[in-house]
View (cartoon, rainbow, N blue to C red):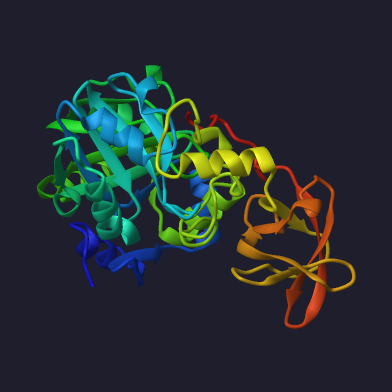
Length: 366
């Protein structure tokens, strides 16, 4: 079990620790609902240092990224971030990721913790461009500071003008007295805020500085439990739940990051799928009757015939109702469609709704 540079602090703060993606991670401090509320209304800090970071450098860096990712990275400029995915050769997804353009020949890829080794091998397999690849995951710490008060809470710590940063852009600068910190206007909560990348050696110093600066704004540490409820309210996919090696980006509603303006891994097959139409699609749904949907619960029609499966589900702290996402047959994807979730052999009524479940202050980055 790996630790992040901040694990001792989480334990000291009384966090409930759980194994996640091979790391010892805080799942909650004060409680999931209270932490969820803090992020939606004020500002909260997530230690997400378990995420993976790769640096790709050289003349062929863009060519390699264009080949292995579904989005069009040629649209990036220095300081711009792009959400994308790594398609596999069978129509599924190796991982979803963020692509950061540092300069014309240097990019940073941010990948899911559980897929670091898998992604590294996958990208390396296609590296016929002489691109220098460096895995900096183990030496990099990452804090996600999220919520409507994040800008005010952090501004005193940096010379970067945070309020002027557009969504899905980043800057490097001094942060809490540390040089060369990467500040990114991104996040996985839909509540706005920043993600801060820095070397492990500065982790404790930066954590303490963030909490001192944020104290007047009600800043709190937040665990992975609230991270999951926050992202689900926004309809954001979680790798291993809503997307995986068997789900197509088109089925997952990720057509907006699947650009056929350039060839990429398995692009011909995905283009064919787009033309022919998909047989199943990831939808959002709200429970009409009482019950909480969970991962892998069966979805059925009124007659009890299987029409899909739940990929994510929870009791939404913001909406005070049970919500979920799942794949259903194409005939049940229309908003308002009546579906049923099998919970302990009972058919519990639900309804397909438009995503996101909660209102979104910032639009998803292209």
